Amino acid sequence: MHICMFTNTYLPHVGGVARSVHTFYRDLQRKGHQVLIVAPTFAGDDADNSEEDTVLRVPAIQNFNGSDFSMRIPVPFYINEKLDAFSPDIIHSHHPYLLGDAAFRAARRRRLPLVFTHHTLYEEYTHYVTGDNDNFKQFARNLSTMYADLCDQVVAPSKSIADLITERGVTTPVTQIPTGVDTQFFSSGDAQGFKKTYHIPENAFIIGHVGRLAPEKNLEFLAKSVVRSMQTLQDTWFCVAGDGPDKQKILEIFTDCSLAHRLILTGNLTGSALADAYQAMDLFVFSSQSETQGMVLTEAMAAKTPVIALDGPGVREVVKNKKNGVLLPADAAQKVFSQTICDAVSDPEKIGSWQANAGQTALKFSRDACVKKLLNLYTDTVSRGPDMAGADEKEMEPWETFLLAIRTEWDLIAEKAHSLARTVT
Image (tube, rainbow, N blue to C red; front, side, top):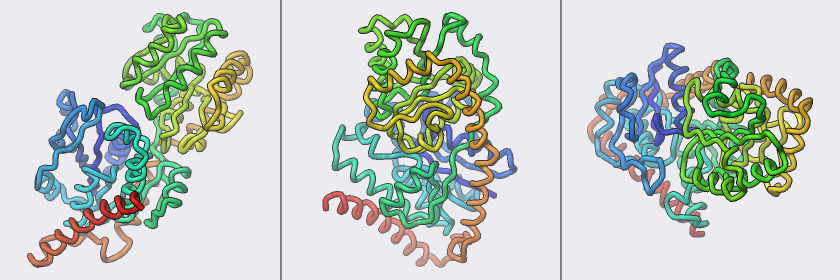
């Protein structure tokens, strides 16, 4: 099968969507399928040309609005030649805007089925555009809902998100397919090697976190909760793997409490260095309310690292309270989060029990199982009926092609107009 994926974020960008797309890309290739990625340019994406033939980079504004995201510049017909040569059987969109619109046009023009993965709670990211604006948050919700209904099939990374978008009005069929995790890889990290690299005492207890250091991740709450626990706990260190605009804020919180010497900010880690970090962590902490799956949680559990987290979409499917960690209410106070950390660190027997269960939890998210679900979805979607059979554009009369193009643009305009109207009303 030939599969074309459109995404607004891809490597070398560090984030859940980029990693999800790359994971499925690799696993689909491993099973003998052809995959073409259409993604914006990112700083440093020319450093590795190993995927040059299978990744089409489109012109983009890099570091949009001070973020680490790229915003695609619409260039007419830039994609068509490459896509025609690739001859896809199905189009898979990973965003409801920018290259998501391009994915819709590509599918319509070729009369191919369009799959959309609802990776993100988009309303939690509107601060990158307009600040903390409630109207724009509502518009983002409406836009993703309307876009989902333009597609033939929607993928939700977790049951929480499947239920949520259905409640919001998505009528297109929704299937739950999480992104797979390489459990064997994350279970084989070198904990002591990591400690030596960052000059952490061998017997230190490491509280850890991995992810983008950005406002939507609720990191000020997390840092203040952890530093509060470390004020009473001896021989504990806080290790944060990731980068982003909130990195300085975390450092300031620890500096103000005279604990910066027990804070490790590694920056972005990949490959074996990331596996080493997870393996070195004795406890993983997480407070984000903007997740759809929380891949870092399953990666941590693959390393048998238990998790303390706030309840939220994509989190409750992984963290089972008092079995592989602790799942606190979403509105839990810093004092409660901090005390939960202290209780866990002070009870090695409890930590040991959680570690064993964490490893079992991770097995449910294996890469092989997840890619099989996605392939079954592709096969079912392609074979669903005559309108999704992928009739070639050349079989259409010129006037039919013109009318199809007009209708496509009208549907995209209507989608945004209806989203705006629903926001206003």
